[in-house]
Image (cartoon, rainbow, N blue to C red; front, side, top):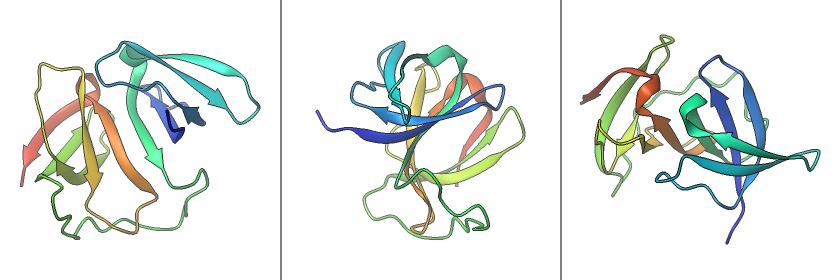
Length: 128
């Protein structure tokens, strides 16, 4: 199974960076190997989102525009998190009774390849 570079964001704002081979949107936990090789068990109910990233640093000065069209990405969606942050992307599926859902950012220059958003961390989800 391929390793994915991820940045995990907890609902308290804590960020943890590492790689995972066993992430599944249908499981309550997954494992992440941090950059110092420590293995963590990540509990989904404590998370805001899991960011599948191109690299760990990104560009902190880059402001995403969310105006790109992602062919085959699904429906455009706006997610407002409970902490006030808003993201816009494309979702193939959104089921509010499931633990979460994936979006692909509507900005092709984003450092995020895809994001798994936990429904429990959202205030609202709206199709655009």
